[in-house]
Amino acid sequence: MHARLLTWSNPENIDDGVTYLQEKVLATLSGLNGFRGVTASADKAGGILSVLSLWETEADREASVGPLSEARKEATDIVGGELRLESFEQLVTAAGPTLPSVGSWLQVRSFSMEPAKINENLVEFEASVLPNIQASPGFQSLRMLIDRTTGTGYVGTVWSDEGSMMNAAADAEGRRQAALDRGVTIGGPSFRKILFADVRQA
Image (tube, rainbow, N blue to C red; front, side, top):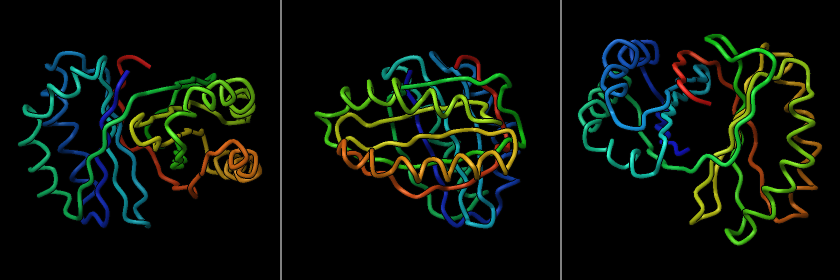
């Protein structure tokens, strides 16, 4: 699975942007080959709006760039702020006992490592870190995205309530040194809420 992440910093009209996604853009997305879902999340106080689209293959994702160019321009006209576009491979996805929905809480952390260490660190993450996250109260889902060329990416975890998310954030801080010992630098958390979700395949 592959992903495209659109992030607007300092947006002015988050709610109108999400409405545009739901009422106008989703129909276009649904007609494109390989489309597997889209979610929107925001930190309104911190001035962040993100839209993550999922694609079956890298070729499907890249083929969608042209058909969606006008929608990205119109979305930015509506939302305002500065738009950053990033592309990733999805390395890990995991689901909890309840599915994420509008109103769920999302913690996003950036990470970076040497590209040569990606596979080694992935094995360690799936063996020791992921089970602890999945066992945490309130866990709903996890998604790890990476750019294999640069070794940079994001881990997003979704939680049923704010308290569960904040407890998970504290646990993540406790794992920071162990990650550094493996050559992984982890960024600070960004806390958001899910505003829209239409995911066809995890």
